[in-house]
Amino acid sequence: MVLLGGLYLGPSQELRKRELHRALSKLPFEFREILALREIEGWSYGQLDSALPIDEVTSRPSEARLRLRQEVSEVRSKGNRE
Amino acid sequence: MSCEELDHLIDPYLDRELDPGESLRLEQHLSDCPACRSFLQECLDFRSFFRSNAPVYAAPPQLRAKVLANFQRERLKSELTIFRRPWIYAAAALVVGLCALTILIPDNAKELSAQAVVQYTQSLATDHLVDVVSSDQQVLKPWFAAKLTFTPPLADLQAPGYSLLGGRVDVIGNRPVAALVYQHDQSIVTLFCWPPNNGLLSKHNNLIHGCNVYTWGNSACNYIVVSKLDNHELQTFVDSLRARAESGSY
Image 1: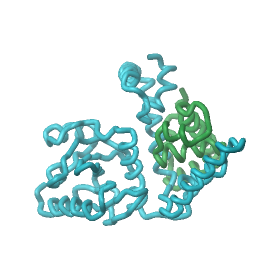
Image 2: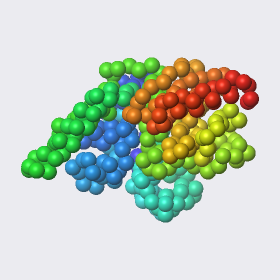
Image 3: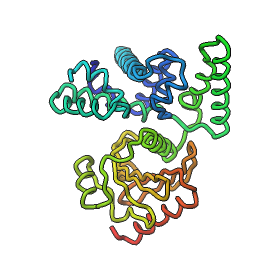
């Protein structure tokens, strides 16, 4: 379990958008793909399973989200140090 | 259920992909474990952070059709050859989702409409239309009051021929909103509403992902109505709600 504590109650909307985009750009393609299809297009696990050539579809959205949260955290902590 | 198990199951649970038995076990654990409740909140915050900060916009229908055609063609090709990793169709799918990011900057109503369509589509795809099953104001009002800081103006939100199936709470534009679900013939109509604290929603009618969407706002609430219903019929529904609100029945 990874708790990032208040990570999403960030500063301005613009800054949050920039942080999210930077974090997304660091993710491997497969993770961005899963996030786009699941979070934005609202695909079910069944639809992901039939469309994507990957195994263990059920654990993929969690992995992708976890990676993204870690990247956002990193982008944010770097931003704070700069 | 242990905390570790919950950790693995929380995403499928929030994606409404967990079977009812496991969902129940998970909810029982949540009610006993404050740490896991914080974790749940964190996951919810993340989702709303992602949805409201990834400025996604629906691809135009022609692009969508083209992408989906590529998708199927590439899939077929990958089954016929040893080409196991059809990156091109995945890339094409991503065009629909992420790459449209900052190209088109929609106004607020369009962005919120796109989010409402996602919620609508998801509720149909997962067959999770309502969390409270009732058309009775005496039931719905306290249910919403317990979950939100406002209650929808239920007396206004009725239209002949549209039976109210019940309600649920969704997140649109980073805020919790009330969702009321109606049935008309075989079609589902979902109305999202929230108080217009951050500005009144402008009056629009859009077609997004094959759904007709109406937005408008008045002093009581901002509204988004989404349905696959024929646009003319949906317009009649929306007009009748607007007329009721203007006649001051609430």
